[in-house]
Amino acid sequence: MRAVIQRVTESVVTVDGKVLGRIDDGLLILLGVGADDEKADADYMAEKIANLRIFRDEEGKMNLSLIDTGGKALIISQFTIYGDCRKGRRPGFTDAAPPDKGKSLYEYFIEKMKDLGVVTGQGEFGAMMKVSLVNDGPVTFILDSKRLF
Image (cartoon, rainbow, N blue to C red):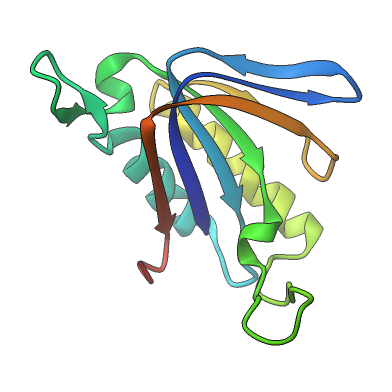
């Protein structure tokens, strides 16, 4: 499982002009599910992201987590994170999970975040979405449940 997380002051996701999710201070999480991912990957990622100390404390240092700040998470499915662009000019997606598995683990990840006390918003799995954000910092991290980076 891979995620691009961005610290935001606001973020919104729409489908066909309808707002599906909106948050203020928190994290925009673009989440990709890999072909060999399991629930343990989602458990690891939810725990890691919810507790990652990337928010400013009273001294301005990145020392607080999403849970510490009471921040929210907008979680967007993003299979293209598994796009392999090393060969040719068209990305390959053989490392991405098939849609049924991807949707199941995406929804499981959202539930894990809620179980950790994080208020969440979400997009629509498989839909063409418009996502807007105001990146705070900018602060952006890339995580992988297999700890590849």
